[in-house]
Image (cartoon, rainbow, N blue to C red; front, side, top):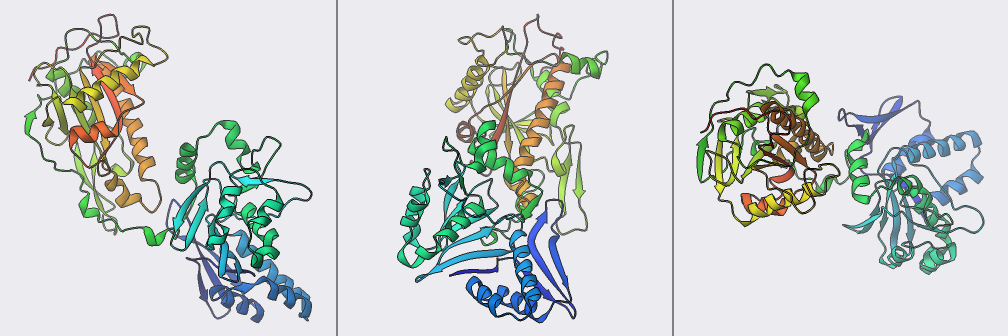
Length: 500
């Protein structure tokens, strides 16, 4: 039996002369759900809506109703409304056998299109971007490209997973179905194709739904992240039961941490005002080589002050339930959250002992977490090794990467972003945008100070966790940046600074 019913999150409001159907979908801009208004619904349509809210509508009954219906126009209207609900992603499509619901299509986007198997000989297979994950009543098959999720609730159908991993024909799919579902093989194929988790293969075994992504070279990880964070519409009710409300009070603007000792940095010195902003922009470049004389605490102080010090603590969205404390810094941050903290792995710096430090952007001080232990040395070596693989840099050979004077590690307090953006699915995307903003700020300030700056494309979260002692998912490294004293042949001469 194939049947339809409203999916979780759909709400039906009854008025005197209208019905308003509220969908679980909304834009990322706000949480106002989309709605569909039906004015002056007839008795048959009202009955259909009540069935969709309740136990569902059997397709066979609709076909029988079509043959017996005295008013063909009214019945066609019912079928048209049902198709509209399907297309807008409001319906669960379920196929049941002798043991209850066996397989269902649960829409995840408001743009579902019904597909049927092509005529003639064909082969279908799962998208190469499919993942299979457990659910409370079986297995769920999803894909970043799909408009629906397929839920296998009958264990007798689990063998279909193995078959669809490779291109298979209609007979193979029929062979995966138990006797009580044999008559629904075409419906099962239609459900798989309509969801977008499977597609019809070409001569090279590539599913039609994957063609563009495969041609462009997308990886699963990048495609999943892109689709998750860049789609305008979001499903407010998907996985709602799995979400745990976050207490925003746990994630204040300024976070206290345990340190071995604090070192106040010198007040920022005057910067060469003869150096114009546009000259800094023009001269900005990556420098991966350093002179024997290391930087000093005064230069480091200037670098940190003009990059990340807290100018002001502000109240964001006052009067609203989501009100929170925000920060103003020289660098931009989405929502003034500034969830990224700076940690410094100091290899050599005149006026400061080697070690691993946290930069307190409020007090403008460094809190020492540990000496230059093995994880710190590995982070420095990893940074030096990664620069050797850079496509430019004639000054650095593959075997002669230099350890930086200071390695700056950016670590994100994910919970602070999640407390505001968890429902939209944007926390990590916004964190990475903040990282890019910080990279440019560090580059420009370092250039103005005559330092050698170098942003890194890779770092180790495990090494950061070992050095900092922080739980890896509460505060995780998301970016790295090296600075040092450049050779005299590179750009501006370093300023004198103040030695602390």
